[in-house]
Amino acid sequence: TARGYTILLIGSPREHDWLAPILDGTIHIHSAVGLDINLVSALLQQSALAVTNDSGIAHLASAVGTKTVVVYGISSSYTHSCVRGQAPSFPVFSTEKPPAQIYDKDTPETIAAMAIITADRVLTTIERALR
Image (cartoon, rainbow, N blue to C red; front, top):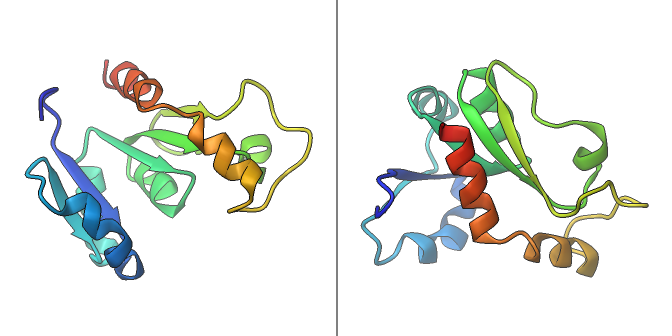
């Protein structure tokens, strides 16, 4: 890519159709969609950084010693646990302070919370994590 990163998109077999438009027509993103968990673990272990939402992949990356940038919306994870493991985690939150209440996924509140996290904000966090 223009910034010199190699991007590997990891997803479950169920996410293949959802992720296909991201992969179509780009030479900058490589697919690891549908790989066995052992292969994903090995790929993560060889990676300089994993950028993910608050998911099993975030915890797996940290467990194998890979730095993580984790994007959090309004969720219980925001107030209860950031990714903790063998490597540093750099969180990107949708707000500056914990919400007054916890929302379920796919509500207007959570969608709005994720929408305010800009690509520039995530890229800035990625660059900080890679220093």
